[in-house]
Length: 178
Ligand code: RP5
Image (cartoon, rainbow, N blue to C red):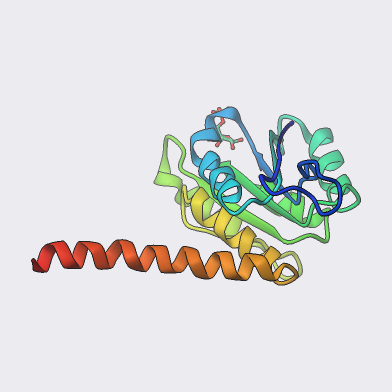
């Protein structure tokens, strides 16, 4: 389990807050290149998070333990990425009341559409918020937005992020029209 501290100190403690609010899990270390951008986005917003491997079919007992302990441990959102018959996000969602964001990972066949369908087509009662294939970045951003419901500073930070995207495009427009 890798824990990433928030760069902002916890109130009153004077020490960095290492208590993770977001858990990032993936079915295999081969998913890491897709999932690291989620971690980077959370780091950019100063959201403490953790990252590890949990495989629904290779480590089923670990899956149960992780999902059942997530809320009591203080996590508020889980991001789960998997490829192939990607049942990891759905299984986690079945065992925790926390919001689960699923990242379909593109495997060596079927272009990741198999993973997308596995994750997005959850039956009634157990929702998984699904981002685009291989889009760890959007999973991180969505986690920040979910957290921002109770953390106004994140609303301001997200506004600033949106502004930075706009500025990026407008700089290109200016160069094009010069
Ligand atoms: C899934 O199977 C993982 O999420 C990964 O996307 C896929 C392939 O895993 P490896 O064979 O690369 O370990 O469980």
